[in-house]
Image (cartoon, rainbow over all chains, first blue to last red; front, top):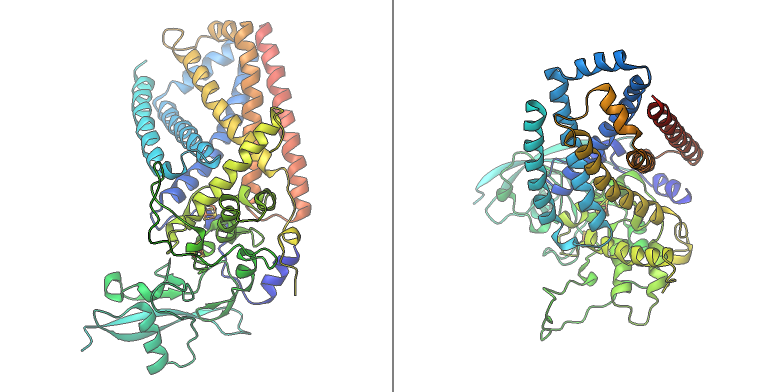
Length: 136
Length: 242
Length: 125
Ligand code: SF4
Ligand code: SF4
C-alpha cells in the first residue's frame, strides 16, 4: 500500500485500467489473445454452470416440466448455442491444459507450438461435436 | 536530401499538469533516420522543451525505451520509413510513473531489479569460446537485461497492480536460482513466492514479446514457478522441502 | 530512502502459489471428468440422455452418483477460485478483498449444498 501512494504522488502513471489491460490484444500477441479468450470463456462457462444447475431442478419437479424443457432445447437456436458452449469448453479446457503445464514450468519453450497443436485438436473436436449436435 | 516528411504525434506532459496531450510535428526523414533521431531533430529544430532520455543510440543501454505506435520499442533502432505509418505515434512507457513528455521515473524499477543488498545484476563475462553442451540450444543470460522497462510497460499485471514485482525483477530473481554464485537461491525463491511475485503472472508472455534483448522474462517466471511447484508438491506428498 | 532489500520488499510467502496449483490441478481433473460427463450423457444411450426416466435412472446409479458429486465439488472450487482471480485483478481495496473472499466461499458452499441436495432428490424419484 505504501508503495502505491509513493508511486502515484510522483506523477501520473500511464497505467491501463485492469479491464483494458486484459483485453489489450491489438499487437497480435498469441498469449494475450489466449488469455483474453480464456477469461471470456471462463465467465461464459460460469454463467452456464449456474443455468445448468438451475435447470436440473426441473427434473425434481417431475416428468412433464422436464419434457417441455427438452422440447425447447431441441430447437435449432438452442442447438446452435450448444455449439457455442462446446467451443467455450474446448477452448477453456485445452488452453487450460497449456497454461497449467507452462505455469508449472513444463514445456515453456514450446508454449506456442503447444497452443497450435491443442488448437488443432480443439478444432477437430469442435467440428465433430457440431456435426453430432445437429444430427443425433 | 530528405526522402519524406513524416508527421510525429507525440505525447506531451509537464509536471503540475493534470493530464497529457499530443503535439504533432512534421519531420524530414531520410532512409536512415531512426525514431530517436527524428525526436532529437524535433527537439533541435522545432521544440526545445521536448523531453526524452537516451544514451547509446545502438540498443545496448536500454535508456530510451518508449512506445512507438503503441508497441514497446527502443526508438534508437526503429527505422522511421520501415514503420510505414503516418503519423508515427510516440508515447512514454506505460505502468511507470511519468516525469515529463517521454521520460518516466525508473527509480522503483531499478530498485526492484537490483535490490541494494543483493545485487542481482552482475557484470557479464564474455565467453567467446563457450560452446553449448548437448541438450542445450542456446545460452540466455539474465545479464542480457538492459533494464529498459519495456516488459513492465507491456505487462497487464504491472498495469493492474503497481506492487507486482514485474517481469524484469522476477527474471533477475531466477538468475540467482539458476546460477547462485554464492548467493542463496532459496531466498530468491521465497521472495517471489507470493501474490505480488511470480504467482500473479497470467502466463501470456507479453513481456517476452517486447523484450528487445532476448531475456525471455516470461519464461524465467515460469521457471521460478516450476521450481516452487516442485517444492510445494514434494511438501504435499511428505518428501519435505529441499 | 526506503529499504530496498528483498526481505523488506513486498509481502512474505503466501498461499497464492498453493491456490494457483489447486486451480491448475482442479482444471486438469475437470478436463477428465467433463470428458466422462459428456461421453456418459451423450453416447452411452443411443441418441443421448433425454427421456425423463433415462436421466433419473442414470443419475441414481451409485457410481454415477459419486462421480457427479466429485464433479460438482471440483467444478465449484475451480469456478470460485477463477472468479477470485478475476476479481483480484480489478484492484479491489483490502477490505473489499476480504468480503470477496467470504462471499465467494459462501457462494461455493451454497452451490455444493444445493447440488448435493438436488442429487439426492433426483436419485429418489
Ligand atoms: S507473462 Fe506475466 S510478467 Fe510477462 S507480461 Fe504477462 S503477466 Fe506480465
Ligand atoms: S527483461 Fe528485457 S524488456 Fe525487461 S527490462 Fe530487461 S531488457 Fe528490458
